[in-house]
Length: 459
Image (cartoon, rainbow, N blue to C red; front, top):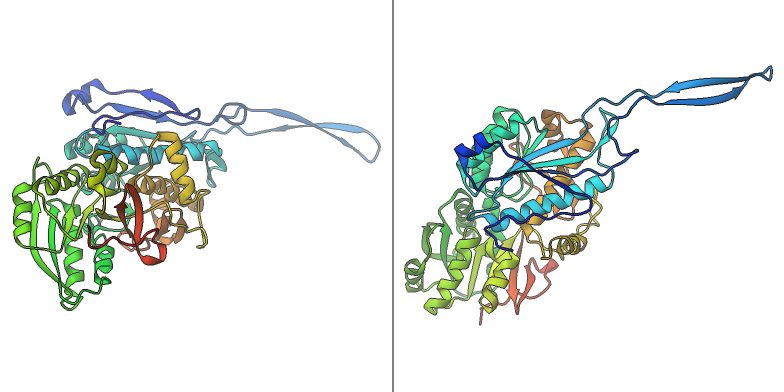
């Protein structure tokens, strides 16, 4: 799949309808095509509006006479679907993870609708879900325009775009309109520092990303402080990760020495000058990254310069299956902090929600979209599960009621634990570390869930 072009996936349970306001798109862009996906599973005679029906019942009286009574079913005139609005970067620099995220949500919606929809107690009715989404072209200004449009369309709930920067563009609009916004791909701690009451995260915040990588290195039993080069992108998410990493290092009593600490421009086409500076600082390991395109470029530049480090750990990019298909053997031994890997099994935790395991998600996603999922696809599917649970438990489609319900949820899914703090930041979920080894993705930390030992130092 070309990561800069949105590719639509359909199934027997999914109908696609394309539409767009020409006037609005003349203001925003030509590339952002508004797409409305209606996933309806036909039930109860193929209609969600019930018509009045008459039925007859025959009873016998004590005198032996037969009496026929007629019963009337009240028509259902409530909402016919649950509408969930969002934008995704289906083109531009974030397209690889945007497409994966949308596919994860589409797979969840298809599963919900195949089972008859979500039961809403206040309506005494099951409703299918409808995803309404637009391509935001990886651009914050387009996000702002499109979320205003989604509000005008009257959606019930909002899902955030992929990435922290785009989520920060959508959050004020959700807050102003008192609409729940669930963040599946925006991890910057700053999202939850602004006092928003309607923004909820399903993924571990950025300040937690580098900690499992540093814990893994800490357990290598080095006799001297490990020399670390920090090389992160200059964006809200990556800066959150670096801030958390520095706080952890400061708590380890001299086990690490930071010999390089610089940010980079994610839009750059080469990082050779800064990588040469890093080499001159003689670090043992390089920890950094931001998103997919820059992560691939960093690895290519390391190879072209002939540089060698005991470990390179980057954000986001290595977990994507395209990282291996694009780089081949260059991907080997590169590590990344990961929100989810398919070998993780949480089914023995209680309460467990959702009729899917990690292995099943991997299999079903690969069957539906002809590629293995990354953790962004898993956290997007999990976003649907979390919303589904909150609607079911609250019995409501009111965004404020469902948001309040999320504060009391403490559940396990195939993705791990969901529990949020007072600000809406995720507090229950924990992360692992993955590493490419001989062309295969392995979970290497924590040891209790590892599928292979951590390769260190890299050959």
